[in-house]
Length: 221
Image 1 (tube, helix red, strand yellow):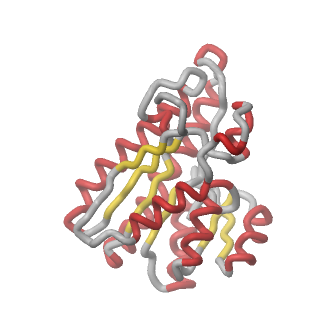
Image 2: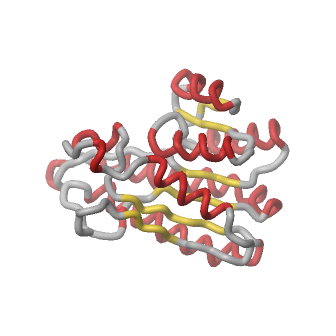
């Protein structure tokens, strides 16, 4: 799992631990994820998902430790709020690189293992990838592309029994959404996303949910 040290990724990691899965948690800074990994009995790996070699190594270390890969969760993400005219090219590139390129690189590295296990890939997208959200154009563009990648890979890999789902929540109670000013108790909870993943794990092998949109109650999409 990428981005498993906080927020949605951490909630999913805890759920997977409770379901009996062996975990590998990755973060750009190993110290950031080591405490959580110790709590969950997981392997902590320092990896920057925009680097090809880090993504290959991440998958390799997981398989070396646990022997197989059944579930890949791409939850590493970054968002920079601002109108397009305010965004710098560096901020644009950062959001595309982490939110889209990173998921591509990790998934590509994991495909041989996922074929063997007929595994599941969960891509943490966003409702911003499904509807216009002023101030989040770059973030939304990256997430829309991630949703498209999810659908394409479903068709490419369905003969191997590999399934992918893009989860697209509205504002979730995480540090990334603190800029909104929305009270925590009015946001979607990270555990809501974890429960969607639990549901995906309990489907029969012939059932696939390619995309799930989670709206925040009281807010029109």
